[in-house]
Amino acid sequence: MKYLIINGSPRKKNTWSMAKQAKTNLEGEFEEIQLMKEKIPMCNGCFKCIMEGEENCPHYEIVNSILEKIKWSDGLIITSPVYAMNVTALIKNFFDHTAYLYHRPKFFDKKALVIVSTAGAGQKDVANYIGENLRHWGFNKIYQITYACGGKESINTEEINKVSQKFHKDIVSKKLHAPNIGDLIFYNLWRAMISTKEPIKIDKEYWESTGLVNYEFAPDVNLGFIKKIFAKIMFFILKKVIK
Image 1: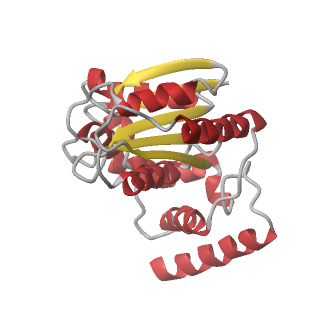
Image 2 (image 1 turned 135 degrees about the horizontal axis):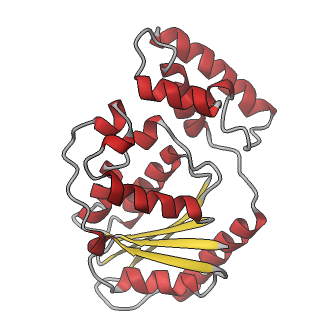
C-alpha cells in the first residue's frame, strides 16, 4: 500500500505526533509533504482553474505535483491543528487552489484519514471541513481522528491506533463504499450542469471525455438499487430545474 501524508501545520508538535502514531499502524510506502516547505503562493481568485482548466492556474506546477502524489497513493493522511476555529492558512490556501475539483471530481477510489488537534475547541468542525472538501474531490471514504490536548504535548494513542487500524484495513480491502445522499446530489448536480445552454466548456469536456456523464456515480462504485434510483430521479429533476 502507498500512503501520502500532507502536514498542514507550520510546525511539528501535537498534530504531527498524532500522524506519526497513526503511521505505526500502517504498512507500505510513505511520502510526506510539509505544506510549509512547499511555499504555495496565495490563491489570487483568478478562476482560471475553474473556467479554463487547472493547467492555467499561475501556480499549477506546484499544486499539481501534490495532486499527482495523491493520485499515486492508496491512502491520504492530511493533518491540521485548529487555528482560530478553522484549518491553518496552509490547508485553506491548498484547498482554494483545488476548487475546480468540485466541478470535476476524480479521486473516486481514494480513502483518507483526517487528523486534527486543538488546544481548546473546534476540532470536529475542522475535521468535517477537511472531509467535506475531500468528498467533493470524489474521495470514497473519510476517517477522522480529533483530539483536544488542552495545550499539553500529549496524545491519545488508544484512539489513534483504533481509527488508523480501521483505515489501514479498509485500504487493504480495496472495497469501495457507496456514497451518501449528499455526495450523490452534488455529483448529479455537476453532471446536470453540463446540459445547460451555456455550460462551462472545460467542465463539459471533462464529464464527456471521462464518460462520467453517462453514470449516476463513478462507475466502479456500486450504488445499490435504491441509491441508483434516487440518483436517476435527482439527475432528472436537476436537469429540469437548471434548464
